[in-house]
Amino acid sequence: MKILVMGPPGAGKGSQSAKIVKSYNIPSISTGQMFREAYKNNESMGIEAMEYIKNGNLVSDQITNKIVKHRLHRYDTERSFLLDGYPRTVRQAVALDEMLENMGTKLDAVINILSSNDVLFERMENRRVCKKCGATYHLIFKKPSISGVCDLCSGELYQREDDTLESVKRRLEIYETKTKPLLDYYEKKGILYNINGMQPFDNVYADIELVLREL
Image (cartoon, rainbow, N blue to C red; front, side):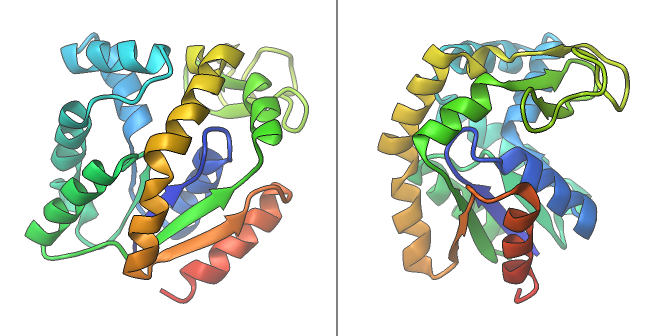
């Protein structure tokens, strides 16, 4: 099972992807996570990528394609993987197709989680992330047991720089102009599945599972 999870910023891609990865025991390829880890480790690629991310911009194709290609060539992606946050442009999608073709494989499905901008603004302004383990919380819908403290590892919770209102608006503008054309790209391939992301979390996941069971 080789799938891509898409949707606008704040639609719940990360949370749904995490549950899919856990339920099906498949490797996750998250460009955002890889860039943040590279930044944390003071790697030049991570530092350069974070400059894009902090300003609400997409990381350049050259940097993004390079890190994904490297990850795809690890042994654990031969049978299955889940892509989260890549590709975000048609050019990246074409590059991904070439990578997979060279590996003798292709994407099985693209899960697109839909949501309205009002809901997205509310979700992202109230999102908090653990500095230690990366777990995600919401100040209204998924509060930690102790304010500012992660339930899983007791790490400190913080608001990511790209979750501020100004950055969110910028990210949504980019999504509308650069990422949405991907939906047409994958719809023409017959592998696009739209999911209503404005439902409760478990309902969204149930709809996703209906798709995955058919693969």
